[in-house]
Length: 339
Ligand code: GLU
Image 1: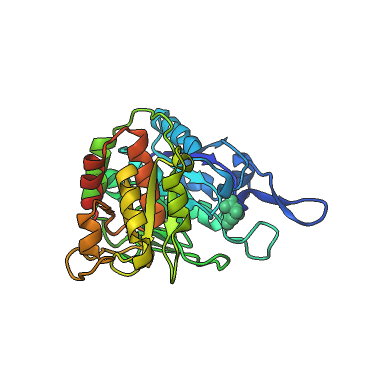
Image 2: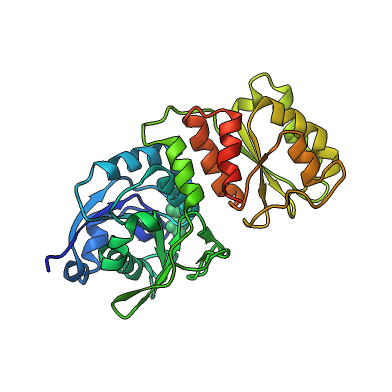
């Protein structure tokens, strides 16, 4: 059987660093360098490699990811592997998942340990990602899987995967659902398919068309004794400080400090304001607690209920909704499908 054509798109990140004269790691390697470091890739697939950028993922933009999605859509290949930094991978992979609906596997991978260390994980993660992209089960289920992340021999759904540690090699996890598959020896061992009804419903509303840049989404993290000054500043500034929507990283099942409730209600009248669980994702309550800062009061006051998405992923979804020009009711319906 002929080997699949896999296209590698390199964006930068630790996987693409090399030491400068002082020994500090700098972005520098391109896609060809990454491929040259893993001769086994040629046994698994016919590889095409392309350097898109050489930047840390902390400096990528949402516009760049829209451009990357358009590029991926235009490729005539059997699978795509994106390499980037780990810092924003939980966001970029979910954005690609919202923007792409392809019959071919799209995999995002990265590295936690840089190439100058004794045990860098980049080469192993790249080989694993290409194995996943070339795997017959993955190819047969590509649309059902959506965009996936491969790190440390595990495969994760883009809607669920989180960076759960800043430095450890096992930094990634899907705490709500667990991995979809594992790599063992040279095999991909499938374990489960993700439930993607809410992503599919969102995709139907969002479409594939290139989106106009919209005003950015503010991430407002609620915390013990949070006074809400930032929320007040957004309400008082005529341009809302430039923001077009807000994510409220709420406590517990969807709660905020009582002192910030009035400001949040005002904000929700001015822009789509989505309540999302700061606990790391997981479904919010809807009808358990009463009182002014409860989920019942906040929902009645018009705050959009974010469902099980982590606030970082909710921010990506809201940004995509705003770019697509969706109005508040459509946005609320789309978030509601996430539980
Ligand atoms: N901060 C850099 C980035 O996200 C390096 C982190 C990494 O790749 O692990 O690109």
